[in-house]
Length: 251
Ligand SMILES: Nc1ncnc2c1ncn2[C@@H]1O[C@H](COP(=O)(O)OP(=O)(O)OP(=O)(O)O)[C@@H](O)[C@H]1O
Ligand SMILES: [Mg+2]
Image (cartoon, rainbow, N blue to C red; front, top):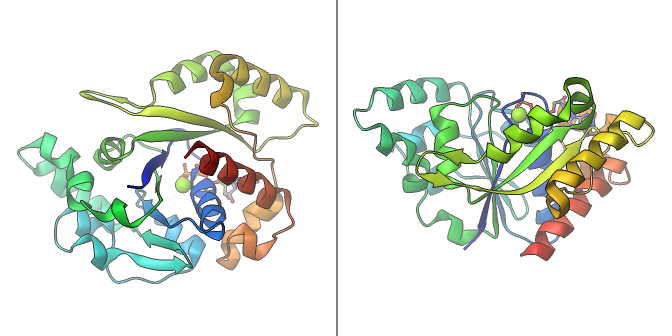
């Protein structure tokens, strides 16, 4: 049975999608079978991988298609359940269901058996707490939370750290915070180094090695490429490879 890992932070632009794409690619290149699920109506994953598709997560959540029908192959060893703006309507339909608890179980229920085909299922959360996010939290077993070191330096770490400690808590359910992942890290910035030290003090071994700020990571999606295709020698490629190694080591 695959590990189901959510990549979540309700703050926008912290590197969630970039992490799912490039961590997914790094794991797949090491021979792991990976499924990425896009929980965001912005639909960035299909764009980043440059894949076209017939069915998306919306139809799956509403039970209109089976899980295998909306899985598309993005790369060798790497499959995707894409999303797009139809997710907003699907969400509306889920809200209207009489049984709200049932709506929140829909991802778990409608993908039953699918995780047996993969070593890792990576969920790309949207930056808002929605019913689809709740579905994701009930599906995920553990979370990777990308945090932007420069942003933390700006707003102060205390509140963010407290938020992080509770990020996986939903009523009747608890998801384990597996790793915080410092992103956009710049070692030359004293503030970034300080923030990293604070994170390590609070979360000890649950702080992953940082992903450095890298223009190549920003450019790769417009070429519909992962960092291993676009710039395999870049810092982004080695940082996500390092994260993949850690995940493989942890099981
Ligand atoms: N380490 C990095 N260095 C430089 N740019 C990065 C890095 N990580 C991500 N980016 C860029 O920053 C922007 C935001 O990243 P991304 O889309 O991955 O964040 P997100 O958390 O998924 O955003 P949202 O909350 O909107 O879903 C993108 O343009 C991306 O290419
Ligand atoms: Mg995103």
